[in-house]
Length: 398
Image (cartoon, rainbow, N blue to C red; front, top):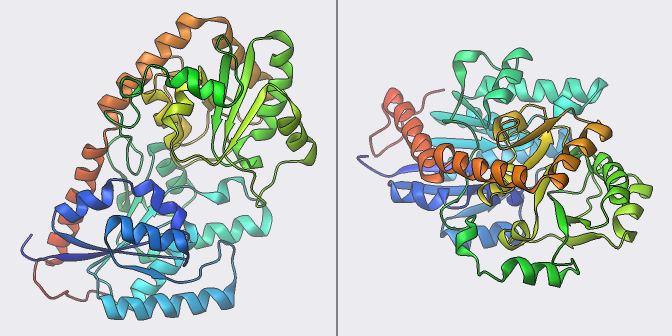
C-alpha cells in the first residue's frame, strides 16, 4: 500500500465492536488508519483507548425514528467531511442505513455494508416492511455487501435485498472467526478451572451441565429452552442448566419464564461475563434455540472448547453447526425437538465427546481469525485497486 488508507467502521452501538477483537490491530498492521463511530458512551471511549484509534459518538436509535435519524445522518456526514476516509465499512441494520446514506452524500469512494443479521426475518406487518426497505437502501448505497454466513446471503438474495453479484461471504462465514488456538482452547486453562467454576455457581462436580450463552430475550428461544428444561429436569436428577447473559427489556421473555429461570435451584444465572472460556469449561453441552441469527459465534466458541452444540436449523446456525457431526440441529420454536436433542447428549457421554472433538477440529480448519482477517484485507485491496485509490489523496467517486 503506497500510503495509509483511512478506514471508518460505523455501528449503531459500541457493544458491536466486541465482535472486532483482534481484527482492528491486524488491519492497522497492514497500513490502514482505522477510525470508529457509533452511539456515544463509556464503551466507545474504552474501545478507542484499547485499540488506540480515534472514535466518534453519534446518537443512533435501533428503531426507526425519522427526525433523530436525519440528525444522525447530518452528524455522520460532518465527521466524514472532517476525516475523509477512503473506506466506510458499516455494520448492523441502523448503522448500515445511516452510515451508507451519509457516506453516499459525502462522496466516500468505497462504501461497504456488512450484514450481520436480518431482524426482518422474525418481524411481521408494517415493521417487516420498514426493516426490509432499510436493508434494501443500505445495500443500494453500498459498493460491496458482505454477509456473515452463506445461508444468510441466500436469504438476502431471495428477499430481493441485494443482487447476487454484489454480496459475498468471507471464506466459510463469521465476521471475525474464533481464537481457538489461544483464548478458546481447553488446553490453555488450568486443570482445576472446570471444578472451580462449578463451585462458584453451586454446581455439583458430577453434574451434567447444559449451557446457554447470549442475550436472555424471546428471539433467542429462551422460552423453549425453559420449557425443555422443565421436561428434562424430571428425567435427569444430575442435570443442571447454566445461563450466561442478562435479561433485556427489548423483546423480553414472559414473566412466568423469567420466574422459572430465577427460582429453580438447578438453574444457575451468571449475568454478563466477558471471560467465557471458564464457563464453557464448566459445561457439557451448549444449546442455542434461537429464532434468528446472522452467524452465531457462540456456537463456534463452544465447539472450539470441545462442546457439542444443539441449535436451530435456521440461516446462520446451519453454517456454524454440522448436524450430527459437531452438534444437532432442531426446528425453531419446537420445545419437544429441543428436549429430545439435549436428552440424546445427556444420555451419551461418548457422543458428547465425538461431536465436541469434531467441532474443535472444524473451527481450527475453517474459522481461524487470521484467515478471515486476511480475506477481508484482500477484499479491501481489490476494491481500492479497482477504484484507483492507492494515491495519498482520496478520489471521490459518487
